[in-house]
Length: 195
Image (cartoon, one colour):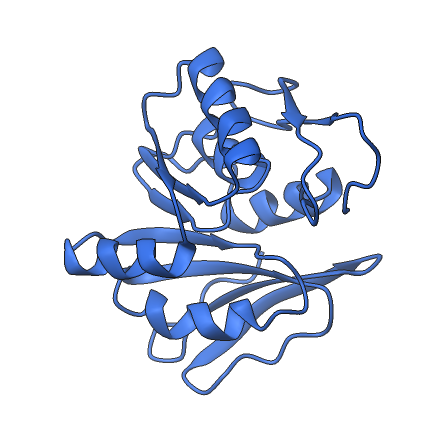
């Protein structure tokens, strides 16, 4: 949901240690926090408890997805954001929550993914929710191959139906209004259990 007015609005963390905690959403063009019901479905698919998992949120925006993962016990959440206003709101939220497992990176998502790969970083879950209609998912998926743990899952949120490129498969998918959401894996990974 894109913001259009001058006033910031809020979303809430919906589960885990920080359940019901509001997050300020700054008025940044194109910033569209993942709707509550979509996040609820996603975390039902993933399992409510993410203890021990490392998560990457390369287009952090409001922080709704990455902070939701941290609230649900992820041991580490790396969030990348290039917009200074959104990054300031993320820093304030991380400080207020005392979210020591959250690392914020200021800058471009693609540069950050390349740096993380060069550093040998690996993630169990990637939350891929870039601005819609710019082909960013298709650009990001090949870069993610270098940072995924075996068995890793990638959440993909788009504004139109999504067809994964060769080498990827959709395990779960849903739609809420104009938001299409998917849980994908590499084709060479074993199939997940249906839930």
